[in-house]
Image 1 (cartoon, rainbow over the protein chains, first blue to last red):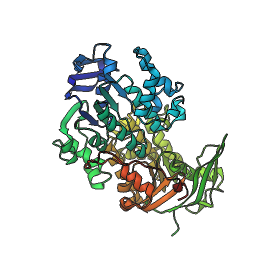
Image 2: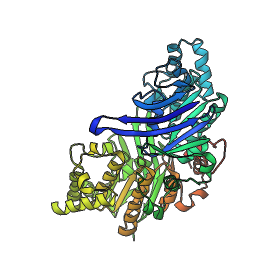
Image 3: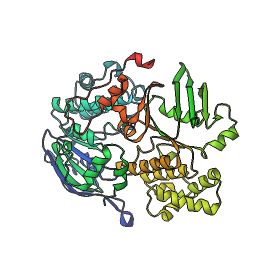
Image 4: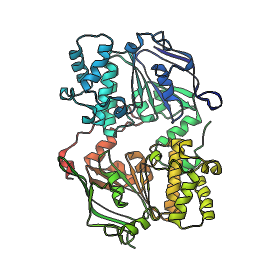
Length: 257
Length: 278
């Protein structure tokens, strides 16, 4: 369903050029949920933004359902949608929930707007009473539900999730993760989830790639992650750090280049 | 020996157009030379509790307490000059976001040295030496070079470590750290926590560690207060946080995904109105 080949993303030019992604390749099968894990600056979000068409300045190959994402193929928005980390920033502050959800339908000339908005709100567990509210009248979790509903308005087959719960409290995180798991089944979605949180990826994904400094360090299935049995020392260190503070372990941590 | 910090029935409220809002409702604790964690979700009042101790609340906030005392000094009745002598020099506050806490038009080295001179009362030459030592202590490679940089020239993680260096250079007796490592990568986070850990162990500094991360607090602190809606609903030794008895704490712990578990649905929290009062 998703194929990425030798993806290279460079920011800046000349002396200041920085290669954020330095040749990344992976495949995601239809219906699969794939995790991209790494620390800040690893390039995980940059890969996602290239796939979403938000960054067109890259080389290599990337295709979704056989369509090259470097083209501006009009089928792409109906095929792939994205949910961002911060629902406070990703919703227009002066657009109501109704407007945020109707807009993609109007742009793509899809009818039955009202019925579709109602259904989308029900699908993400939003009370119909919120339909004409503004984002500042909603909690963080409710806003993220709106952002997910908006991403699903065009009935995409692929959902790209960039740290969808890291701005939320843990109790709200649980609700959103449950919702995403349910939607994945009911809407037969293929997902890529970018996260720094190994437990979230273990909960949500079938397979994952660990990134560091623009490269994929290793790929593994979720069973390997759950057994905490990775191949690479970098991944072992990430796992160790995710278990909480340990004075001995902290002293041994090193920087992998 | 009396406690380093005594907080008894601390209350913070705000006047709003729809009436009075009580953000912190009767928080009490005593702190020794230890690592105390305060955990809670957004809006629980944990950050306001930290700022109230520093007497750094917005003007619209009303602060009340039966007692709020640091090393015998009554912080409620202290003069502004007395408070200034305590803030920075004896109680230091590290905030989550270095972007808003570093001066953009001063080099990193100048800011740290200034903190050392003003609050630590050392000479210019000593301040410079302490600056470089502190940058090294927060695991910054090449401190000489970094000291010459401006805040916009460093990464977020480095900015956070610089801020921690600046707050620690006057050698405070109490450090209040509000989500100090949330913006850091896990490995750097571990290293920064190790620095704080050493300061508590070696210098006998008191530490209030405010965080939403239950696992981190459980593994790092000695004691934990769990806050909900402006009150402390549970207090226990950090090592036994897993044995929490309050349904809110239990609910939070259960709602966390874990690497080894295969639960399909995570239990969500249904908030009981009774928790507001206990």
